Amino acid sequence: MSMVDEPLYPIAVLIDELKNDDVQLRLNSIRKLSTIARALGEDRTRKELIPFLSENNDDDDEVLLAMAEELGVFIPYIGGVEHAHVLLPPLETLCTVEETCVRDKSVESLCRIGLQMRENDLVDWFIPLVKRLAAGEWFTARVSACGVFHVAYPSAPDVLKTELRSIYSQLCQDDMPMVRRAAATNLGKFAATVEASHLKNDIMSMFEDLTQDDQDSVRLLAVEGCAALGKLLEPQDCVAHILPVIVNFSQGKGKAPWKIENAENECEETDNHEDDGESNMLILKKIQELSSDSSQHVRSALASVIMGMAPVLGKDATIEQLLPIFLSLLKDEFPDVRLNIISKLDQVNQVIGIDLLSQSLLPAIVELAEDRHWRVRLAIIEYIPLLASQLGVGFFDDKLGALCMQWLQDKVYSIRDAAANNLKRLAEEFGPEWAMQHIVPQVLDMIKNPHYLYRMTVLSAISLLAPVMGSEITCSQLLPVVVTASKDRVPNIKFNVAKVLQSLIPIVDQPVVEKSIRPCLVELAEDPDVDVRFFANQALQSIDSVMMSS
Image (tube, rainbow, N blue to C red; front, top):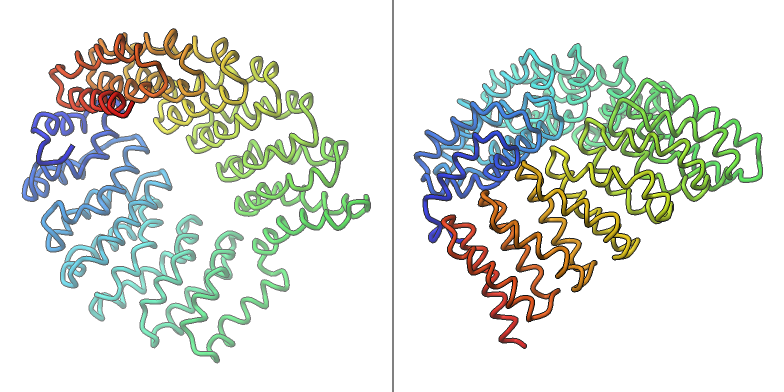
């Protein structure tokens, strides 16, 4: 719908849904912030909508992530760059939250806005924000601060530039390793904006502090910035300041880079020792040490490559030596380590077989299916169809079928959406008859769920399953449920019914369209809700187009 044609009623609904208890409704409204802003106008958006977002205490990461992304492109809706500073307070708040992806997106949006701001506004509004974040009591604010210095610095007067360099130096020596890692990561970008006269003294002093940090991960990130800093220095200064650091690390004094390189290279080295049992045992011993390394980056690098050894070692050695390491990494406290292991599961499946998989890996997979980090749950879901194809239909039904239904009722929308797609892929793998017995009845039963978000997931699943199930099952089993859902009291359900009915038009025969689908859409086209009417009329136009073309 164009903004010109969209009446005020849906806008009022969207604004109201920003405060709704349902996460999906809030997420829906956040993704339509630009629609709300255009309806309110630039003045009311600045004075009412943005302050509301600044005070928003939403605790759902998906909603916060969407908000951070939307605000980054919001300058046109508040009256242009002269009012850009209005967008800073809500993003400053988002820069302090616990979820890393929300903070990263907020920093990205702040940088995008800051690069468009006028110089005097940067001094009046942006630089004070940077200083507040850098002085934040909670480490998350200080981590975010490191990512915006390169935007603030060029426009600062000389006195403020001196202060900003001093603040960044303090961040490089922060008590929290996470802050020092952020400072190391962003040092190259900050250095690129600093005057040449201050590079050797101020920036290189920070660099040397970071390369001598007591945390492997900080030193690793600092050394990764050598190339960026080297481009900014004169050749003689590179020899004096950069080269000694590289030499130290190449001699093993920088533990993390050496360990990570070993984590990746030791596994590849096994290819050269297929028949050399003694060499393989030495390599396995080193890998065992790396798997319990104190640095999460080392363990993460190891997790991404370790299973490549399984085909080389063979079944017995994999079971005896590699599997315990593999399982310990599957239970690592850091999600990136677990994610890297999950992404390589197929390599071990090919070697150890189904029986051992059921004994050792499936309990870990079931545990990860309920992981508190939704990205880990999402990775497991995306792996399920591959696992299903390797396990076979009988084993899958016993062990993993219930999980697939459980994900349909996850509190995170991305998980529910992936779960619905997962069911489609399983139906393709095992066939319509299996799906009719093991998927369809459970999915259709969920349409009775009192929470409308889960009823919406059922509609999504029906739309995805219908092309796989074929015309007969769609007409006899799926379509009646969709038609019944058209009587739902929630408008969001009803306009999704209209969308699903539109997707079913090419699947079912024309008499079914005229007997069941068209009457339902005609009724929805007279619904009090404008969105329901819009999608119902859109579907009716599709029916007419099909009839004309045939």
